[in-house]
Amino acid sequence: MAARMPALLRRLALLALCTLLGGTATVQAEEPVRVFAAASLTNALEELATQWQAAGHPRPVLAFGASSTLAKQVQAGAPADVFASADRKWMDYVATADRIDAASRVDLLGNTLVLIAPRDRAFKARMHAGFDLAGAFRGKLCTGEPGVVPVGIYAKESLQALAWWDALDGRIVGTDDVRTALAFVERGECGAGIVYATDARISDKVRVIGTFPADSHAPIVYPFALVKRARPQSRAFLQFLRSAAAARVFRRHGFSVPPR
Image (cartoon, rainbow, N blue to C red; front, side, top):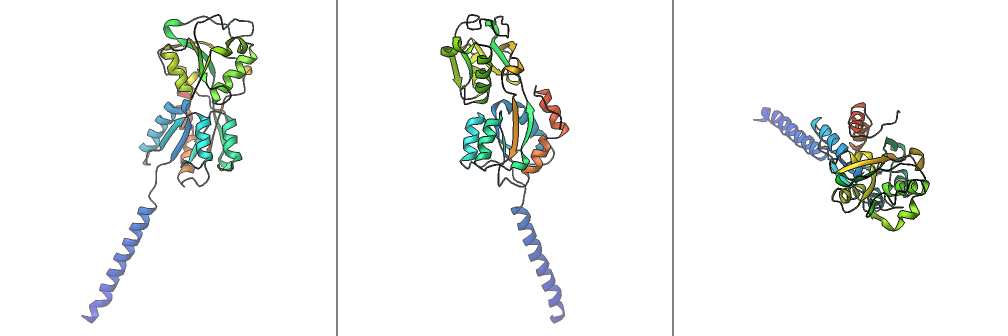
């Protein structure tokens, strides 16, 4: 009996060690990456989340909305790991609050600003100063809230640059995000809208009337960054979004991917 005790003790010690290691593995199991992203990124990021999951990771938790709203939530301490804004202004806002990992920040994507109309109420427009846009259609013009939502910021810049703002000011409907503006035009509640080209292409209920000159507004840039105290696997996910495979997905959805 005494001779068998050391072997029994060794087995008990091994069992305890396995139990401890098993508990540690459970604690360290990979958790889903939490992503706060501009509404215009919805379709592309949903596809990329599926690819990430297919590679053996938990599917990311994606929250979409206006960059302005999401930035304020991140600034207030919302549980996010990655923040993707549709402009630099709102990423700067979060950075000023010391809520992002500055070294991880990258201008990942670009986009184009377009004028749209309901498909059955399309009209002709010339996208240069001197054209009477206000007289070319009836009803309201929908876009993101000017001065707040990125697409509305870009839209106001372009309307002012083309000398169209004053004539349209009282007819502009500012929405919470670009997808809401698109929906208003789809339903015919607005006779025209200003959205991103990537949003217009997902709808068969609107028609692109014209593309705003690139020099009529600030460059449309999508900065991505890790939020401070992000989960460890979030860095790998951001690297995945910067990969050549992800770039192909973004381009297929209509985004431009600047060379790096």
